[in-house]
Figure 1 (cartoon, helix red, strand yellow):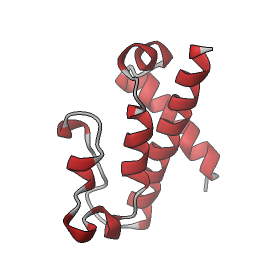
Figure 2 (cartoon, helix red, strand yellow; figure 1 turned 180 degrees about the horizontal axis):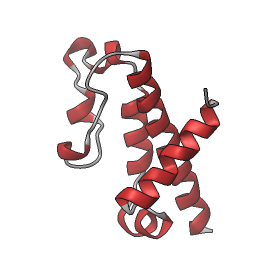
Figure 3 (spheres, rainbow, N blue to C red; figure 1 turned 135 degrees about the horizontal axis):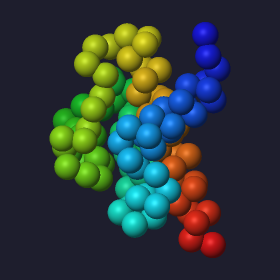
Figure 4 (cartoon, helix red, strand yellow; figure 1 turned 90 degrees about the horizontal axis):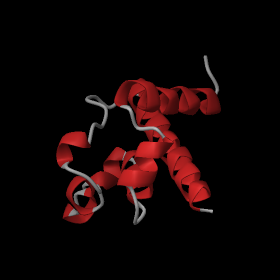
Length: 101
């Protein structure tokens, strides 16, 4: 079993290697906290995503809905994948902000 930081680091590496979302891409294509909002969406527990009729997908998701890819089933493994995505997006946002300095 990998630690949380290892799971997040592996997800960030996957985003860079398989999706091409490296720091250069993030610096060019993301401003106005998009990476943070995406992380919030993945970190939000399922039971709150549709609370009071507010759909996180349409209210907070910063990009086209085709990029919203929550886990298909509610399970421990699925939740870990969503939290890994959230953590990796936060790491990407930290890197993007650091690159502004």
